[in-house]
Length: 368
Ligand code: A3P
Ligand code: MG
Ligand code: MG
Image (tube, rainbow, N blue to C red):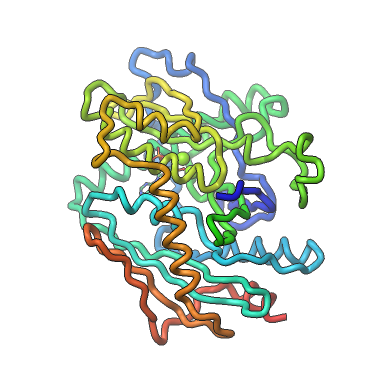
């Protein structure tokens, strides 16, 4: 794996409008004292005011492709070379597949080729199958999902600590939680011989984000303040008080590790909550140490536990296979990558007649 490097970023604001800056990046602000009430912090607080992103809108790869286009136009018009352009979430899904045992993991991804001239490869976007859950479970799922966003709200402030007023810090939890707001980092990295351009949401920076995104950090490697080194992934999990809980958490760490690893995010903070959604404590994890932690765990079992190297090798093989299987065509057709839960196959097939999902600005720019 080549070290990921951020070369641009973008934000979605409260109305889901795209901004070419880091205005939606949060900054870590998490105090044990805030949780020191009798029951912990009630993560359901404000659920009735939750402003939810419209899940019915298919955003394709728009934010990523529009930001990439803008970056290229502003940096000498040079078109970024790469073999795969995608959201981090797609790669996480593939990477975790060898260890996926539950029945909910069916997915389909759309793939298309673009830009023969500059040898830029395939882009992946997903269409997930919705699993069918009955009403009560849906309600609880929604509430649990809210807890994740509420945790992000209480754990972050809108500017670096030194630039925030006392009021901004104290009132950070007063606004409704709004999951339209996101900050996304766009990185270049490589896996085996596959060059990747990947966009992914970053939950917060632990202190600040370095001002400059330099084009060539190797010139000044020692002085280079890498933005990725400052990023933190936030998660929630049920408080662990029995072996089953510990085993489930170790399983969940696969996704936490994979998604952070892919963007080069070095730290994950997990907020532990009760079954009823009261946040009681939190713990920091160094992302690169998570796979070894799993190996050392008393629950480790070579057949049932996950293995970081295997996950990376599997993803590398998948991407290599996709890269070599999708033909280079000027007007690339749409292909589908399909996985049916619990099957042993990944299927790659043409989807004749399916319209391209690339953003028109990107297509126009790449034609020039
Ligand atoms: P947790 O992270 O505590 O699970 P992410 O962790 O990827 O930054 O996502 C932030 C939160 O969004 C999650 O909190 C969860 O609450 C919610 N979320 C993410 N993916 C989801 C999904 N597929 N379904 C429901 N909620 C989801
Ligand atoms: Mg997130
Ligand atoms: Mg998170």
